[in-house]
Image (cartoon, rainbow, N blue to C red; front, side, top):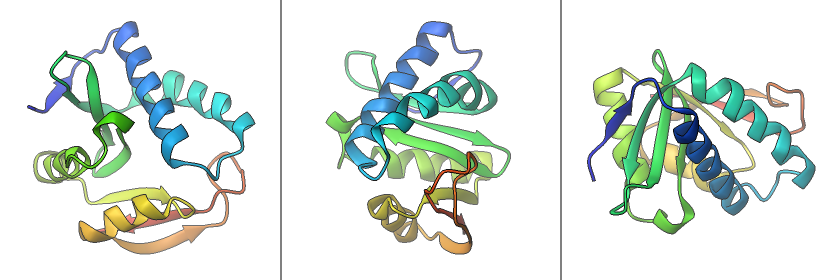
Length: 146
């Protein structure tokens, strides 16, 4: 799979990335209250995805398998479709954006221990912690750098 930069993504591409985000979150973020997911989904679709530089991997059928969103030297989001877990797509995207986009910072939900361990394996270290997420909800955020 080759990494592709999505320049001016279409509404349908943004919708597909939002769907991938939701399926990934539902598989990995069991700490989220179910009623919070629609709020975050709206924020991802309307604010986060349009603001980020997007890099994607597609499966053999051309559907999105994983994506990374960056802003400057920060990885704003990295999500892999559950059907693609364990295939190295997250590592591939992270190494790509670190090398070619200068990414050296990211945030992760403290309760998402698998993601925190993933970033630690790839050289990220905790530099700060917030008790709540940017929306003020009780989901602590770890700020990471490498």
